[in-house]
Image (tube, rainbow, N blue to C red; front, side, top):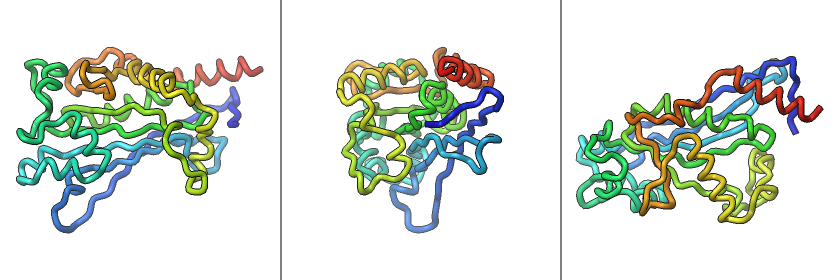
Length: 243
């Protein structure tokens, strides 16, 4: 378990990376597969310490349409993106499902046709409850919301995924999935409550999904305090309680 000292400033950084390559046009060329690392970089550690990670996919549907590339084939690049696509997209007309669009946007226009799929977010146990997850979501929104017209996710408790111990990496082992809530209903509700607190919304008829709408005011997202001071206050409160 990580120890925190009151005297030291804890520096948390979010790092994003993705790759692109030359070659024949295929669905993967229209998907930015972005890996995010949440790292601790401060005077207590010799090198950046990985404390969390996330995966994001931005489907560049605007460009695919301009290139006359099949939107269906873009979604079909990965099983995960196709699963989301089948729930939210009308492939016959290459658009968001009309009833979903009306419930999310009404008569307003999306910023563009690109869709961001927020795939997963993992934070090590000792760093949970410090507001890092909420800050990451806001940072992600600040950096990528202008690139997409809709952000969608399917909240699912990662501890309920089929884990194969022999294939688990060190980070996975440190996540201590076995100690997390194993009741699917309770775990899912807790997860949805967290994302709701950061500004994600649910839509009737799409109960398995949650959404963010770039271009629309989001008071819960706006309320997330990105300052270092707010983070350090939580650290000090935790240390004080331990003492």
